[in-house]
Length: 169
Image (cartoon, rainbow, N blue to C red; front, side, top):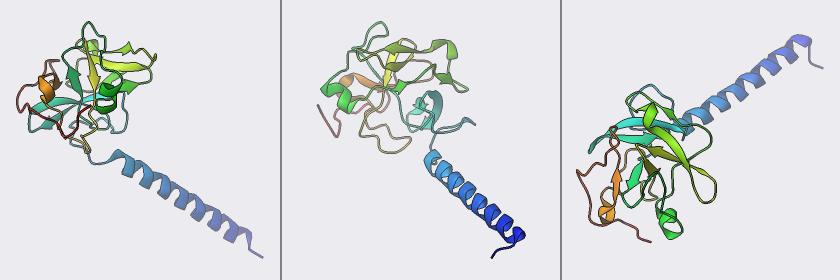
């Protein structure tokens, strides 16, 4: 039979173990992204600026590169079906947030045909590319002359534009 003190110590030890596991999960999910600034990683609705080999570009809260698609017009995406399997839209729930260096006034959303909300910056719907496996990768840069990473100014970055991509649709 345990004493009251032993039961209290066992409960405290169990609570400490649970807290340690939760902290480990949070740290593993946050990763070690290439994005700069004090904003926490992990929130897809947070748009940040990261320094890459192409210079400063926009990334989401998971430090994944954000791209624009030049055929999109007036805040509307035209990338669906096969296109969106390779270039998934940057989807959010609720209002997106701008980290330092990102214009909050130019950050918003557009509703896709399936009613989900897609990030928009300076009028451009934003996307990711499935070939970017790690934070800071820019494998879709310049693909087919229509996919480009986005500068904090909202313009496309043309530096380092590739002619092909590792995947096609």
